[in-house]
Image 1: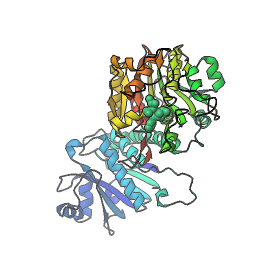
Image 2: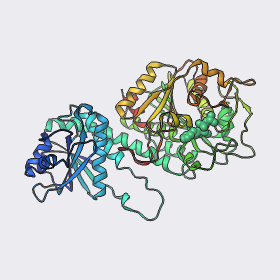
Image 3: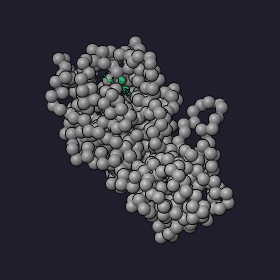
Image 4: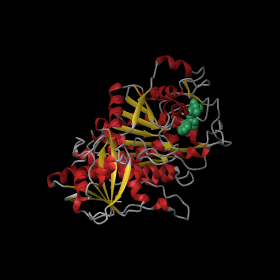
Length: 492
Ligand code: BES
Ligand code: ZN
Ligand code: ZN
């Protein structure tokens, strides 16, 4: 979908579908909606009166213009109550328009910037959210089937119309940012939705090497082992598919912030094998790595002024004759020893070594993102990601970046008392506990041991990385969660 900007009146613009909006409770529309209503001889007011158009968030109503306007059809999208209006509602409304455009196969769509007039939002942010909702809502994973059904239809162009020429510059700047961010999220979704026989550690390394404006270093398993990454090695040694530890550096000079993404391209559980039911979904266990990889691509495109390194410890987790076993004790890059209670708690092992690697680079801040625990899915569902950390200001900055991006983060505790659960008789720590109490926090505390006194936050996206059914601008399947939050955090 091409994003264009046009200065002029909505009543003059020729297109297949023209999007305008309405807050709930509004009886006589103003702004662009009022202009269109007049051209349509009061058709919109009449539909409001009859109760067909209510302005409920995401509600869409189509009106054929019958030649009264250059646009063939008009779509009135609901923005909900004006008191609840925010950027995420712009995204939801924009995605509702694009979904309807796809359904009626409208190639040329035009829209106003929802919320920029009566909504009171800042123009660049509203324009950014408009593009995000449109491009994220239009996403469709192409897949591999020969037959292409209706879901493959894509809107050709989306023209954003603004009457005041003075506002165009602000709109263009917001649209550009929104486009870069949405492409990054959709790329991440592609990587996550693709099967594990396509998206291997080598595939991810090749994707990283294609990013412009960054420096990429890829370690094979032998090199990682030589450096002392024994925890990462232990997870990987039972897999035939070659492991890759990927480092992506952006910026001038020493990196200050490390983003670490769990990159298990398939998690069978290893010797502690998972039940067969839904095991296929463990192709998404590299969602953290995908989020970091695409964040790095986006920040390089946006030219942000920070020094960031993205670390992606990638491997499969498989059962085999030479796989790690429950009861094994292994070392780590930090020197700390780990007793493996379950080979299915593999994410924290690869993250532990990546966190130590980041510390050795001398970063001041580490943020890791991982599909780490089933317990996080139980606690927060697919609505919010869990966040934990050793630095409250960092946790709060990430939560607020998430709020602005429309990605919910909910803090979970790292109580000292929990540490008792994972004490080992024969090593520095157990990789998990037998009882599974406070399992998400136990995962966090394990990582905290490796972060030590470096400022660190951990985000568990086990529930939010993948949706079983669509919600707003998030279609069924991979969400690309945390790409938007990370970019927002790094931009501010
Ligand atoms: N990749 C899984 C976590 C997961 C579960 C992600 C469901 C997405 C959906 C992780 O490696 C895992 O298996 N965790 C175990 C840890 C346990 C053994 C302490 C879990 O949560 O069951
Ligand atoms: Zn696992
Ligand atoms: Zn896993």
